[in-house]
Image (cartoon, rainbow, N blue to C red; front, side):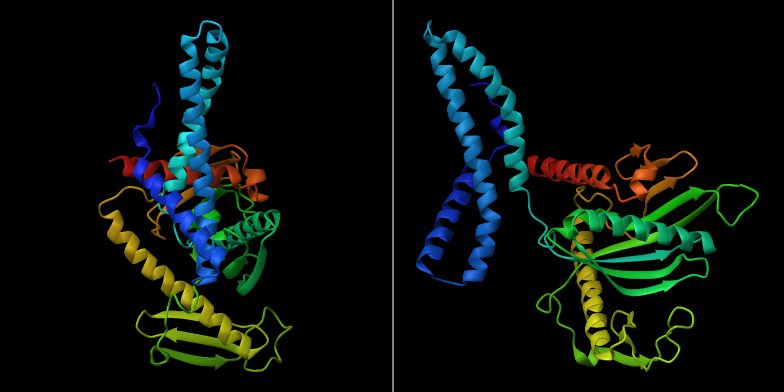
Length: 355
């Protein structure tokens, strides 16, 4: 049989199907931790659907091949085989993808942090452009954009932005955005018309639960201070801003909402996300010492993208992708890039499984 099933691990498929049956049976009997079983069921069900789809296709192929010996059925069988063989690689690929190790954080909400890098006012303006680009992307996907901390520059740029993005599968879509984004354009502030290069750093962290990261109360110092609002409108606020310093890691988090109690909660959330991210980075670094599947190893100092405004061009340096539609991209049209990064990451993982 001319099927390319070399990459499909049959025993593993069998085990996954048996596991789903077991989970279904326990759920039907109301045994065990229902929430945990429910989570496992929703992870296994789409994988098993892919497996069954592939198994049906393989069975149809065998049936059509058997019909080749029957002179009356031969023509029909040949036609059918053509269509089935065409579908096979696609269905096999879908099964392989469904078997890839899942990043447990993929389904989570995320914290997005944007800070201007080198380039003064122009870098702050570009950081503001990136923030609007992500906000539009978030809105197009029906997710929620909650600003946690925002400091603006005189010209309307951004000195710092921390946002919480809530929705399904947020981290999976945004996790490849972490790194240094470089811009090349003629600043509005410059009359001479020379092209400037500046940059902004983006960090995307999965939101962490309390069970992920236990923070020892003795490790943190909490200071309350007067909230410094933008311009004059908050001058008379009470001491509502909260700054939390995590002594062991040196991480400092601030939040300056109106309510001090809410600030403490928010700042703790951001701190948890950053500590959780540190843990994940550590694990990823250990792994990447002997693997190549990181698309952008998550190193925040790595330059990942260039936005060239005079040429309307965006280049993602990690995968060598260049798109000439910068206007649409700045309007939040990011799916082409994110799809390409995801596909590249999956291809690297598949190559690893094959070795």
